[in-house]
Length: 394
Ligand code: RFL
Image (cartoon, rainbow, N blue to C red; front, side, top):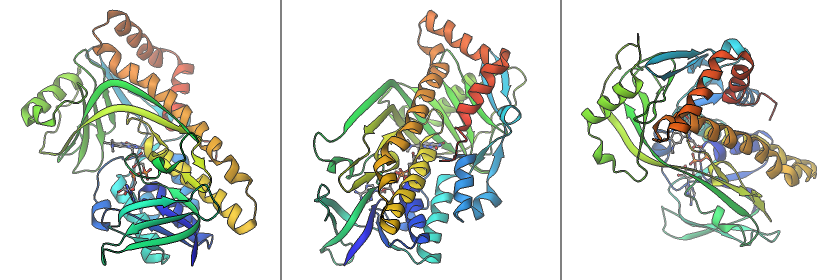
């Protein structure tokens, strides 16, 4: 048996792709190293852009999301001891949806496996790709039940296995270029068992370093604290975390932070990379496997979904209609949005971190960037458009 598509990885990219392929009657199988319970609980992103939600909706994948996600229409910058609310909804008529990634993944798995009867294999080990530069590729793995190697012959492999997967390394040497950007800073990523401290996302641009607050649900709130890259989370006990958050997010008239136990504490070395092109032979990468964008502007999950929509259309075009043009253009189409978001993340990174560089010149230009958002309606609208993601249909 030859599967039209083998999808490696059951994150937002792989699961969305799987659902769309099943809806188009293209047979596929999803391979995932973790268990179903694990991926349904793994906390990560939480912000979805409106165009992505509309696209999920068109494919019947946004039922729970539209019922349960919170709509956000503003964010707030805090700097120089003041609060500056940025009403991007008013400026654009669009908003963000806050829906934690584990909930989206849960919905997508349920729809794929339980509703649409899709083939998904959890707990697979030692996934390897073979002959992707021929027209008869295959994927092998060790079955968790039998411990035996299984080989899946296929037409195409979709590499959706995230930043630490194996598919990127299967691109033939010399076929793709990986460009990388290091910010030279760390973020302590925290999840607090506490209600949000404000009804919107907060960005604290402070000489002691950046601090952020992102509501996730009434019970759980994400916080970020800039820290040295490679810092040990153990250096950040409860009291130090909350003291630092209070100081960096403090502003005149702001409500006190709602404290609670820290249920996740990880240091992220902030970096980005882009693989170009995102495909070689019969292997097509999607999501974090192809490009990582540091969580500065909450773009990663949106880019993963964008790839899944493009790749599903392209594979369906090729496998169902015999038209390979979209597949040939897949990488370039994806990368337009990827580079746009990378550029915005760089711009925003300076806003977040410029004040803490210890460099008076950069601190000065950072404040100029911030003030421009609150004095120039044109600058504000341009920022809002980038923050919300281009509305152009994927
Ligand atoms: P994922 O979600 O990493 O899924 C990949 C899946 O592949 C599995 N896997 C393998 N399967 C088979 N064989 C192998 N060899 C495999 N190796 C790995 C993994 O177990 C996993 O299930 O990739 P995908 O689908 O590309 O989705 C990308 C997003 O998850 C990612 O971009 C976001 O989480 C990024 N991100 C954010 N994005 C947003 O849009 N908004 C946010 O607010 C936001 N916050 C964040 C984030 C990422 C964070 N981390 C991980 C640094 C906050 C954090 C803390």
